[in-house]
Image (cartoon, rainbow, N blue to C red):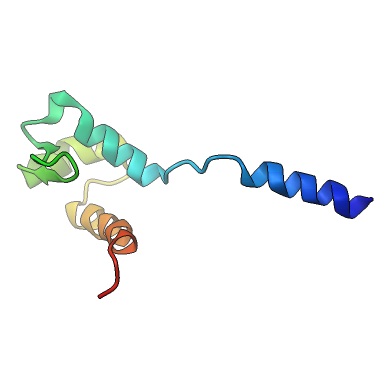
Length: 89
């Protein structure tokens, strides 16, 4: 009987959607804000973004979303997610 209730718990747990990582959510919010378009904005394809002014991005925007203002750290963390998404080869 205990095994049956365990199966029910696992299947209901597996059905829950997984939220994106906080880093990705914050990055999306930062890029998607039209007030920041002069510093960072979506690329023409809508699937990429461009940091037009890295010094301002680091100084003025990063501290509003993250616990640092280091552009290199932001890029390094972003690359961990990009490398997970790209096919090997």
